Image (cartoon, rainbow, N blue to C red):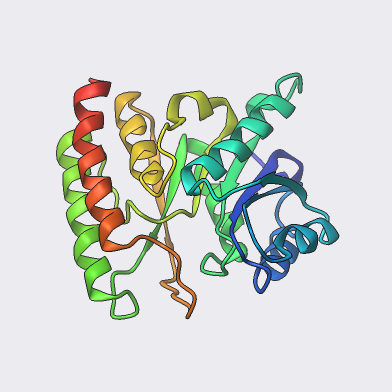
Length: 230
């Protein structure tokens, strides 16, 4: 199977990312056919920059959270491609707007997806990752493997790829960062074939990812999903 650019859509959740969004879009364009940016209630000109770069821009009036933002984007693509006779060949890339995810790895994700149903990006848990995040991430990885029999090296990385035809199976309800773990829970529930791609560990000065409070909420939700989904 060729890695046809025309079959790949990138979905980028963004909140106040005017500083980074332009570069992320311009680099991603090299590897995907279309880019959907979901502006999650930004106060800056993130949306305007994304439009100038040629992205399809969807907007939330207020900040709803990463889970809601990605669901808005994925739902849009799913509906837009519903009547496309080749929709079973369409692949989705989820990539963050803050520059932590290198678009040059998109072809690697797509290649790996050829014989899998979803691919997870996996960072190295080295000293570039704050200690509290290393400990928390490893603990969540352990709980997910224990409860859902899905063994991933980095359950909290948002860099992912999947076939659009499988979106309904992995679709999440969580509005916040818990969505990344809920997606994995759904992979376990439906016994989807998954793979992993090593990605660099990058943290910038304006890191907006998971906090300790988010981590506690994620663990609580994981146990809740185990009861509800099985």
